[in-house]
Image (cartoon, rainbow, N blue to C red; front, side, top):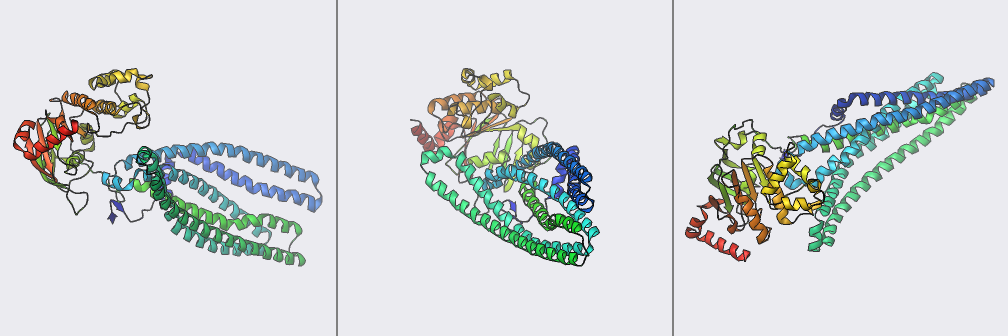
Length: 585
């Protein structure tokens, strides 16, 4: 069942999902596992050569044989260290290549999440899942593979003890069984507590990211203390849950250790009696004691393995749920394309509400003809930006129909919708990279000459040429090298880098001074009769040249026409225009 765009159910992502990514780099995966297995085998024989070395001395005083065993031990340890270097190469290649694959695939899929979900989710959640959670996923996988090999090694130790003395082998099996039962209890609590800790940590990370991103407003509004106070509440909640997880985990871990100490005592007592009855030789006693601690680690390693698998499930669910359309609502498109789209848009009795209780758009009907310049005006909250969001397919109508030419928007393909519409927002986002790369994100094949032509068209070229590195100049955080008007001009040029049929300006000049506003409007006027231009306007003086002006009030189209006609015949529009003139003055 979905709640606020997300599912409350748990999906079963885990090792199987991770292996799908590792299979893409099978050579590195196999190399890593093979070397790990060889190292485990070497570790087994390392312990055996130590036992053989002692046997040579105690049984027959064969010091030459003891030196040979010591030499074999040295060779095995050097070989193991060398293999560790090789194994690091295979694992890091596998880890980083897989990390790239996961980040690319999950991020691409997360960009398909509907905007209404993004509105409530926050960017910090996605950032955390695609960075910290993926790092944790890689760490847990390495621990899992290492622990599987260690379990196999411990099993071979136990078989060896059975070969030396059946009763000691049975005693160790019983001890391992008890410690496994106790470890299950720890894993049970871990699986309950770990998701709560990660969710709480995610909220803290998200808040921190928001603080960093909003540092300018925090400074100017002098709200640092209250902002940090809100963050501190989430931090306290995280600490409480994290402390509980650690307290429970450490307590149960130490309980397991106490059990091991008790079993060690009884193991020694049992061996003393076997020695007393001549059922055990000192050499076998020493060898069994040497391997005993490794065998008793079986339960700890098995517990760690189960915890690792549980962690993988936690992290994998958090990461791959972003790709799941059953968990987060995803954008939906049809398969239709219009080969010769004219630029016409029609709304027919369209309703929309962000929730079921209120409508932002109420039976809106209008038609935008090809290559017209149209404007939507009205008070804040009247539904202007909602119309833009519906045309851009960022949100989905509640009822009614939206047509591109004569095709319903829900039947159109993703490529058609995205390739025919560009939006310039009031506060457009410019990527913190070079000017050239900002254009190449929009059009990978664009040339420098084409970029210069677009910048000239939007009157930003002279400023770019003054920059020390020209098109190679890095924009900087929040486009710090550009004024508000220059940002808008650059973004208009960037939008024109795509050969779109519809160009939308959403309050594109409302934050600019009069001089920059007039310059931007001259740029927009040049597009008249070339493509369909849609303008959301706060200042009515900026859209007097529009072919059609639609006036909204409480989500309804209450008037439409040219500027002069509306000014003469519509009192509300007339008053809005006079007010906007006063703002300009």
